[in-house]
Length: 165
Image (cartoon, rainbow, N blue to C red; front, side, top):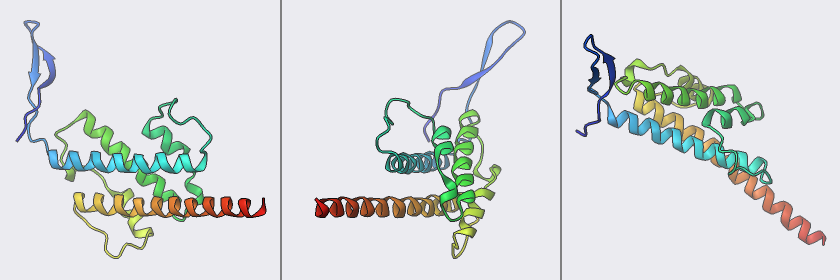
């Protein structure tokens, strides 16, 4: 199992700084959660770019939370559950950033469960990793559908404009 450097502890009565080793870090869970977060951020980036391709998206270097705030969730079926799940995965990532030893069972997953229920998922998983997998795959399918449809509509418009010329 890989080891991490210790985190900063407290200063003792002799003014020596103590360090606290990381124990029981679930690298599998952390890695999967971070990968899910990155996948969702990728789709958020692509979606926002598709909605406003003329904006200079590279320069502002928006945070995940800022991108989520720009996401027009009201235009989607179950949009409230979509944005709640997007914001929740960011909250989980932020919590892990401050306490790496947090166990998957210590987190709340209700926004993911609600999203999957509203998305008519046949059976909503109950274990953290399976729930994350179902959430990120279903949400990614939403984004893929939108992006594919938008690409088709854009191409269709371009073809119509060329035909009219």
